[in-house]
Amino acid sequence: QDAFKFYGFISPPETDEQYCWAKECGYTHLELFYAPHRDGRMEKALDLAEKHGLKIVWLGENFVSQPRPYADHPAFDGIYVDEPLSIGDLEKLSKELDEYLEKYPEKEFYVNFARMNGRSWDVYSGYFKDHFLSKVKTKTVSGDIYPLREPNRNGETMVSFLDYIRRIGKLAVESGSEMYFFVQTMAIHGHNWGHPARRPSWEDIRFLHYVILACGAQGFQHFCYMSPGGPPYTGEFTEEDYACIHPETLERTEIWYSVQKVVTEFKKFQNIALKFHWKGIMPVYGLQADKRSENFEELGEYVASHSYIKSIFAQQDLLVGCFEDDDGNVGLTLVNFCDPYGKQKNTVSIAFNCTEPIAVIKNGEF
Image 1 (cartoon, rainbow, N blue to C red):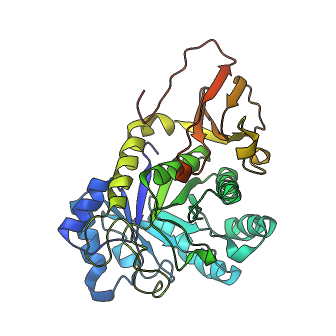
Image 2: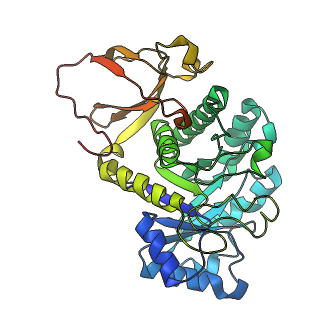
């Protein structure tokens, strides 16, 4: 993979204007979840996607059989199954998927590994390793969690967010898969498991992308692009829960422009970033002890030390994503691990154990 993938969930109405806007925003893919045969929408979506240089991934419950008639379309890029599947579902899926991937080996297939209804991580990872991987050949691992709470910083929430992402990243590495992750690009008041989430600012959206990148992601799925309003989301979202495209006016919102700005920044350095392989994270506690996030430093594969770093100090909590390319060159992603709501800056000092020149990328630029 030589470019980041950006997925817009849910796809907008099938018009030239809407698909042009999705492309202008920077998306590479749109995720559809309606029935393919309903009102000819699938054909319209695929034709518009091809016209505007986008790809379509279909989200469904009947797995392979429904989208198969569209698999040869140039814009059709695969199948996305929402939420962990039961063991019985995996048995049903396995044979169909083997046939599908044998015929279309270049197509996507992935499952969103949500939090499995509060089950422990041991149960979660055991399900993935013992059941999912033994039956399904997946090229991608995906997950979601939405941490931007109302209205103030919640360190525990952010640490849980980080812990979940880096665990998904580890599952991806262990299974030889790519890792995608959902980014919160809308407010979530009536849903989100009883935890209202604020409307994200540009700083919020940028922060979430960099945390996810620091945990090894190659793809970013946005919840949502088109605001949800119909089944299966009826009644779960309020009028304030709009995303990039307003559900009533169908106009671009301020979130659309924030997403465009972040995606543009990420595309500037994607050819460099994707040459590196994720090795883990190194959380570094800030010098201001009263502002530290509890249990933050305990999450890292590199706990306050890395062979490439002689010393590192930060005023606020700092997340370091650790990478290495095929030639053994080290790459580090530094993220100010403070809830952007507080607009707290961070000052970082690093001494390196090396004599070679160091290339620095900031705001997407060298």
